[in-house]
Figure 1: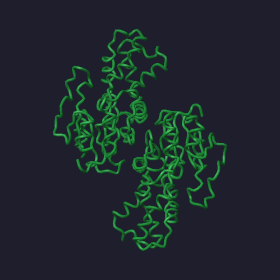
Figure 2: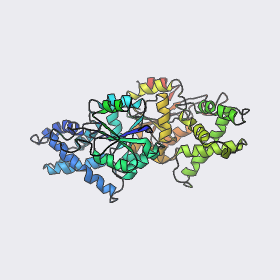
Figure 3: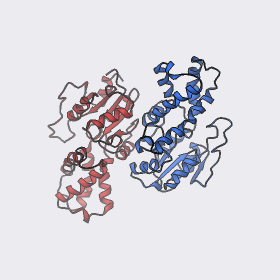
Figure 4: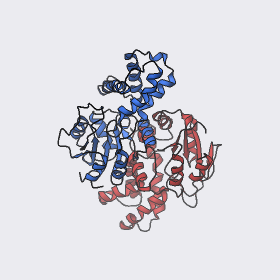
Length: 238
Length: 238
């Protein structure tokens, strides 16, 4: 890790609690539209289940690069239909506001203090599939002190496509081995490692709620394994 | 200006003193290579004179998008040859270090205090022809509190090409009229206004040294005319 200059962060799940934040924002919407019996956290899960398939259309080349805000909106309309609500009957401003739930996610309690420490020594930036203004709004609201906003929109490629990692290193004028991906997801780290990145795993055992069964532990010998971002800073000597 | 959500900043000359910074970094290099008689500020001017022609090759389509660090390096080699120094005789590490002079420019004294105030109310980001890592290194060294780093590399277009402004607004999910360019250069503001941006002029009367004759005054009725970034913040009610 001594050559690492930049820490690049997965964001949804790793830096912020997407499930809790989306559920919080969805709850009043669901209640107002006759879906008060729907569990807002289950609604967040259903919305999120459409995330990977939507990006896969771009990764496979079936669709040109389309920013995540647009995919989220399409997925929102689909999940509302799945719940028996025709999105055409909902005022546009309400759909637009709910879609921005992803811009208003809260960081895990250790995220901002840990990033603030890490920023003293490393370049810190998101390497998320979230688009630039999504990351910007989230950071501004929550005080996340990124040095720059990188990721899918700058690379014009969605993780885990190799270009998402390699173009991020290139933009930073760094070799892949000078970059470390920090993520709560073994699959993301595996793809980054295949590109030559260093890897740091931080478990987020409640990302998917109390019954989470995936990504509870490091599944490979990642370069660093930390319990949270403060522990990551300590392990990196910051 | 009441609809403006984002302030986008020209950087070289507007936020930072490129001439003084490049001269400071060039002075020991020139002395070490038998060019101690060359005025470092004049050397900075000579290097900068190759800036617009180099970008014009990209703007005209004769060359694909090439980041400014690469153009700066080509221009450095050319200007050394103009001064009778063959760059092939200079160690690579010294050329690379001098090229990074542009990453180590100092802000004008009012820049960081003004930006810190403006950030409370507006999204603030560079809309510079400088590439991402150049802006990032500069901001990290000088404490410039950007919300994101936008500009030519994100837009894949050099100002004053319309795409440089329009794609920046699109990335921010804003209409051009919700964006205001802040610049010390009337030409940049004219191009931004033609794209529908709001405009703010801040005079930087010593950007080109004590004998500066261009851009001393607002040449059109820009939406805001301020004496410095603190004055800009005050005029915008921050």
